[in-house]
Length: 511
Image 1 (tube, rainbow, N blue to C red):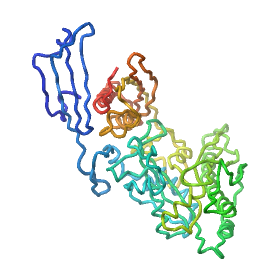
Image 2 (tube, rainbow, N blue to C red):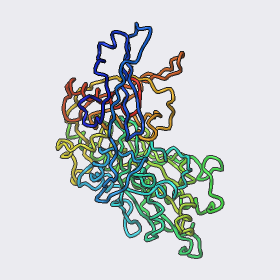
Image 3 (cartoon, rainbow, N blue to C red):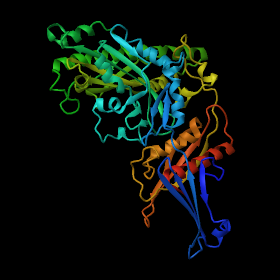
Image 4 (cartoon, one colour):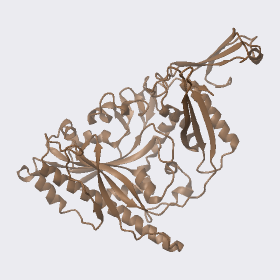
């Protein structure tokens, strides 16, 4: 914060005190009070050689960063309160909706997956509002009251009762309740406070899908027979599949004994796996064909594009399904986790008012699939509006390999600071909990200052000073633009702002 900061409100200062006071052993204390965060912090300057530190000056700067009383999102106004923690950079990105932009790689990936779930069995929901209630996002899915996902360190709150969805499952109960189709997919932008690196971004895109059967509509109430009948209508494939574990295991992958029979789960699991294997065949076969064409055109005979596609199923745990699995694909020499899935926990359709329905669900991150298919190395690229990026994708060439248009130099800057002795781990938005440090709070500050110019932030050192018990952290910030070379002056300017914001909002003491 500087003296010409437009947010400064009032300054109380002894005119006889200046920097000379520090050299003569006097103290000059600068206390910042940020009303938006309900916190204050202080910086103390004193001569190390001084034996006594009489207070000669107290300077108090009031900073008015009060959040607006309302936020407007997609043309609708929402009241704010002490829980509000959404930065303007996130709000401004909400209208982008990359999953619906023509020829964007996120949208192309969505369309490829949707093509394996045709109507009329499946209905595709792609225009659901990102603003949901806490009940939709957490309560309807059985999140415990103390679940970390509810924390303001993880979730963007519009107000105490309203959030930006953290997953597409926020719409699951409502979709089950509508009961207007046997299956569905939901594709949407989702929001989470997270780390800064090449694979994490506060906004990303998920697709989830489900296929349900109704006991009341199955002939004789025999759901298992109905599922096996539907399975026969799915296209077969010749992909090598590794699935060594039993469908049900009493400890690792339990049956929902109060709701499902073994026969029902065996049938539902078989239908689920065949359906998702078909997705892999669709997108990765096309990707292999494109890779082969690209290699031939480039005269590259070293690329192994003839390696057969392989899939394996791994037992997993997810809070909304049981039994559950992860699907892995062998791609370019590595086993890669692609998606998670399982038999829907029966509490979800019961709570949605459709207790007679049962079936399967899956969820997949569209950025993860797109980065694999297009060889896109940095998640920030999806948000680029540079024509050198966007012009590489089209419906006529849906799986063309991304060609980097440049590689600009990195600029590393370290920031080291002491945490307050009262710091905990609650964190959550730099307002009512500003005295507590959480790494996501720091990430939000860095993103707020540097935006997409910051490539990654890593903790490189931490220690506790034994004499005082205070903890020190050191983070390394990599400033690197995707579109041009940053000057050292530009990087220094951003870094200085980051340091000032850390002091102002988190109350840390720079080292």
